[in-house]
Length: 244
Image (tube, rainbow, N blue to C red):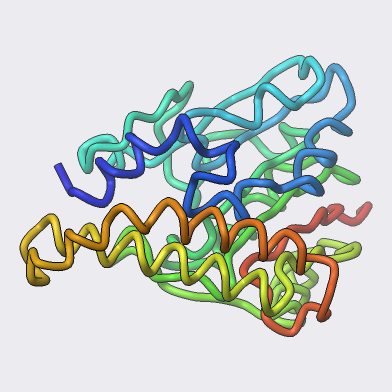
C-alpha cells in the first residue's frame, strides 16, 4: 500500500481535531451548511462519493445515490457505492435529480466540460450543483490530477453549461493557506524519511511534527478572517440549473 495513503487512513480519526495536518481544509463550515440546507425528500447524486461522508449532513433525502469510478477500488480506495460509473457518461435518465454533489472531483476528470454537461443533463431544472474544488493545493492522486481553476474560470465553465453561479466561497486567507501547505509539506517530508527517500537521520526531528502542526493550525484559524482571499486553498459554491 502507498505509504502516504496508509498515513492518511491512520490520521483519519484526528481529522476533526487540530492535531491533523489538514484540519484547516476539513473544517468546511460553508459546505456543511449547504448540505444541511438540502430539502427533505430530494433526490441526490453524490459523484465521487468515496465514504459518503456528506450523507450525515443531508436532511433525509428521498434517494441518495453514491457513484464512484471502478478504477479507484482497484487502486485501494474503499468506496461505499450504490452505482459504479463514470462522470463522463452518467448512467441516469435526463432530469433525474434535485441535487448533485461534486466535491473535490473535477480536478481528477479528463474532460471537465463533458462531466459538467452530464451533471446539467441529469439535474432537474432549478436543481442544485453543490461543488468544491482545490486551488492552492498539492498535486494528489497522481497522475490523475489535471487542473485548478480561478473563480472566474469556474463561472465560465458552469455558466457555459446552463448554470447560474451564486456566491463563491474562497476558502483560505494567505496566512491560513500557507499554514495548511506547510503542514502538508512537513507531513510528506516525514513520509519520505520513513520510505527511505530522505536520510533517516531526520527521524530525530519527528517529535516536533505534532507541535508544529498544532501551532500552524491555531495560527491559520486565527488568521482565517484576515487578509482577503488572494491565496485560497479551495473554492466551494452552489450553482443552480437554469429553467428551460
